[in-house]
Image (cartoon, rainbow, N blue to C red):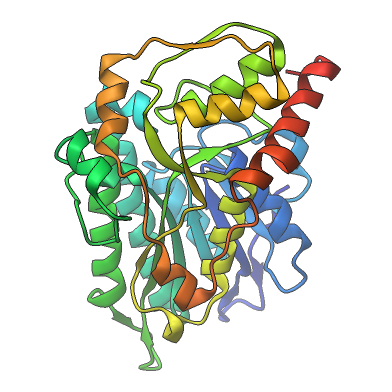
Length: 357
């Protein structure tokens, strides 16, 4: 659906419709945000921008679905001419595994694309005379532990520790956090009436995200859902990590909730621009043990892939998310027990029983 800008008269200002912009909306986080924002009576309509055509299951919930590239300056300019952008959820990114295969392309998409959206937000804030919220999902990939001994000995890692990423994706995300903070704190513009305006940048560092609704696609943290899906399908599985491999996880519905909660909180309550969020930490073998409770005949072993093992070994075993809990009341719905008993096992099992997987 396309809505054109409205005009009040030949010499009067163009009236643009206020909207929320979601980039990279075709993933499950994007789909979840679209549905949740549609159900919020106070939220503006949603416009989405994705390199691929928006999935039909959610296309009816948006004002307009634009197929295009965040590197296309002309497209972003036309978007700004048509709509007043109240907030941006910038989900578009080249993810970790693909970024390692194509590091230069990853830099263009993840860094230059983010810069394009930050410029758009800054210009929009200056035009409308009030800040534009910029919600940015970052990643555990920004961290880099020196070795496995340091990882296992370390307490939960806070936002300002061990920021030595070893992947292009992690480097991209960490740099964009810094650039977003810069825009938020220093790159202010003044609107014509003299009021301060700028980018209200807010970032979440997600742990490994697990979904019951989508099939794992080979991501670095996908060894966990791969174990569950294989057991539900009755297939033998060799995990690509060692059994002692431990990182923090979060269920996908909690990830969507966290983004919306961070966007909703008043700016003065926030003590930082980047927050850790987490739910629980389990080793690969602890995940396998929980799976065997529900699927006693599950055949699970381990065949570590050296490259991906090196990456997950560099990530913390636990994240300290006390700042998010204190500042804006972050609390996951799904701890380890509920994640398996109430979400993963019943929903993934139903997928394979219905033949939809």
